Length: 212
Image 1 (cartoon, helix red, strand yellow):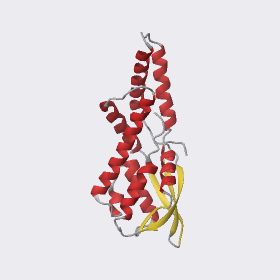
Image 2 (image 1 turned 90 degrees about the vertical axis):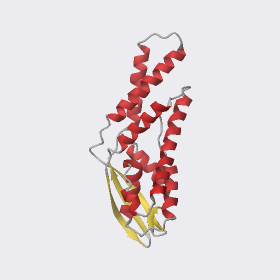
Image 3 (image 1 turned 90 degrees about the horizontal axis):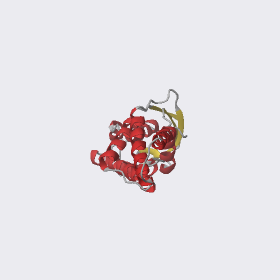
Image 4 (image 1 turned 135 degrees about the vertical axis):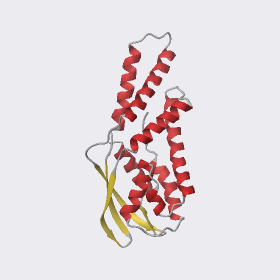
């Protein structure tokens, strides 16, 4: 399982919905924190306060969930395996639960002339290490067993890896320290938004995964 950096794509959808709603202006830190809460914590209260409708929030969340599912499915296909829907649902669910354990604060560092610099301080977990350990343990287990064909071994390996990954996400503990993301913001239709949606999404995803 590699690279879940989907936020840069999904944020563009979210921001277009915000831009169309003509929401009353809040400060830049609150706006950026609301986006964090939506995609990382699954908390919709902040984004609702910016004027995003329940329908648009549901659409943004579905877009993100669908993108995650397709990424996982593609990762398995690249290994020559298919992942069944029940396992896919479980894997997506436990990953979302792991992200929801994170926490963050946001503060405005500088603001002038319709521009602001916000810093998010967020906890994280090392997703790359979690993934690598899950695969390594599955590989070690598969090498201790006898299989009639390489295909059987590969199927066992992927099943064991997936189960290890599910258990690892369930056991995620957020970092004690935080990592920082600097976000340059501008005002669009009365709402503070990241000036570069793609960069913000990529930076946030990397930070949460302990790779920032």
